[in-house]
Length: 396
Image (cartoon, rainbow, N blue to C red; front, side, top):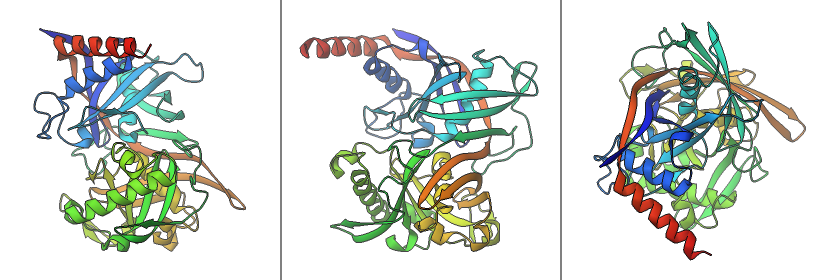
């Protein structure tokens, strides 16, 4: 027998996953996560998620849990979960900016906010980071209006523009925009030697590495699939995690893949995107590649983009070194990534050595793909309940 759980499958930006009302999931977090894992077909040692709705990639193995907010300053609150493909883990460390783009449309269509035409402003409390996001959602006849001519790299076709405003994104996980207190650090890594990095925490913590530090020019795509490059970047990421207190050891950081993220940065250069379209150097302000759960993100993580643009505006970081000098005074910065380009506006204030990240603004699209119920074997829920009951009983 199987249990039906109401859910909506939505695409937000370049990610997609199941959206749940919090009230439709078990209240116990451990049981809730077992339900989500079963829905996605995780863990799968073959990394295919064949027995669930997961897409066998980090960008399609994500979930959002949404509820009305008890705080009058917000309309809704949501938890983002990164569902592991091959491990029995749902990570709630950090946020996904792409999935955030679908929270507003979900809230409108599910009646969690009062729809206003032509645009409904949805105030979102992001539970993972404790940060505020405001989504400006196009509405027609009381529903999210997904039709439009706005295109984003990494998604075929066009849709309506959803404007996202991330308020005060600095210190999302560590409490500080510059977690180490420095704009650059040198990590001493036994297998790699001394690696120059900048670690910045805005929307999500990200470790920035100059491309030449790992033997790359920065515009490559397929090269990031090599074992050597992936291994080097993951090793750097784990040591940086320890440096900013997100893990006690590199081994512990191995089990926390969602954050910090790691990005490779380089000056603007011409290349061809994954779809074969040219990306001329004069259309971008810097070149960047970001990893997601150990693999190259085929476009660019929105939270990573917010952090990248913020870092680019802070003098002394390795990202600022790569920025086109002509973009130094611009509010909008364009990142060249594997799928094309991503433009983000960043409001940064500097007073002496103090730096404050006031707001990041960008456009995304979203679409409701399917609605109904996801089916989860009842015996898995029973097993999770029994296991959790025994665990709690044994801890008394």
